[in-house]
Length: 125
Image (tube, rainbow, N blue to C red; front, side, top):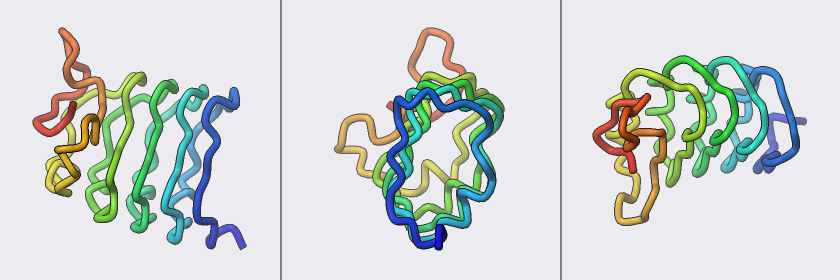
């Protein structure tokens, strides 16, 4: 049964299309690595349902829109990579409030520190 999937490593596989909302059904999944593909569309709000996620990497895709506040429910999250996309807006305060290990360099990365940041963020590196 797919809902018992624990880790997904699909980075650098030339995958395209939207991230499916069903990813939020993977409630036992601790790592989702989708970096360096061509995923497009928005980050599904349902990802916040995968509450055991410790790591989420969506960097270097073609994702658009804002960062869902539902990611703030991911209390086990130790790193979040969203850079290299076309995301806009503000990093949800709930995500910043997770208390990610800021002593670990780059715990949250989301195109926040460029000359013209696409995502406003008080907790990003």
